[in-house]
Length: 101
Image (cartoon, rainbow, N blue to C red; front, side):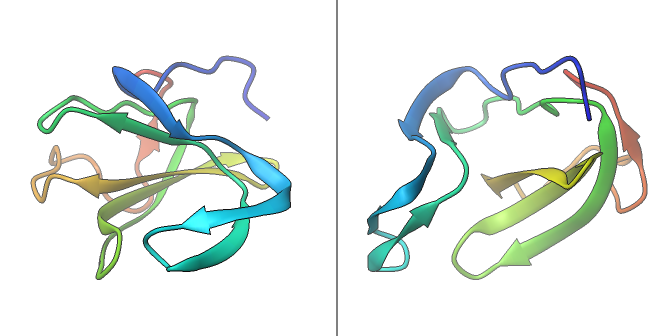
């Protein structure tokens, strides 16, 4: 498990973690557990890996837009969604990333 974590972007928490009480999902139009945090930011803001890890996937989701998933070990993943369609060349499945990169 990582021992250093960084804030993934300059923004604000738009939806917090809730693993017991279902909360409304405007995207899915239903109530569900929200087992992560959503950080909203301005368009074109830089986005960083929150911890050391390996890029697990780079994809385009019809609801969540361009998405990068990083595996940090110990079952921990971070998923950055609604990203720009242009990534740095080295952001591809299998690439190592450092906290703050």
